[in-house]
Image (cartoon, rainbow, N blue to C red; front, side, top):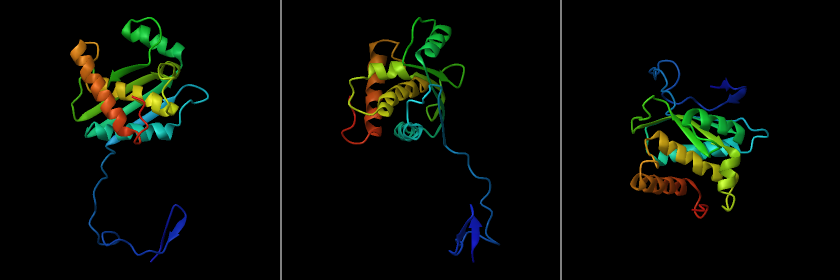
Length: 182
């Protein structure tokens, strides 16, 4: 038996669970991890597929059941507008996170929201790190992901230390052995 799939012929027999009389598998489950990366900087400074792979690893390391992340990379001027409008702070910053829910507290098993990154600010802060630009900006994505999970370095030394330890753990866990500059 053969069939066509995407224009290619397949001469292999069907799996036992396929074909006429096979049980209906029902509706397919939605993907557990939805990750969107958009770069509004031209030319795009980062290899999107590599960043997406790193983010997927981080989601797994964080052991959340589901993730819906929208990551936007912008120029400093755009980041400065967001920083002023939403945080009331002058100047640019590396990363701002916007949790999907209004309270800023998600369920520990779900990671959802928007992460806004300034390409230039992220690369400037990590300019001495001996790794790829994607690995450099990934550190700030991890930082944003932790904010979406409720970590907050602005609530005292204990909170800052806890967040920093988790950033380093997740970041190092996602890079190849010996690649972490921190």
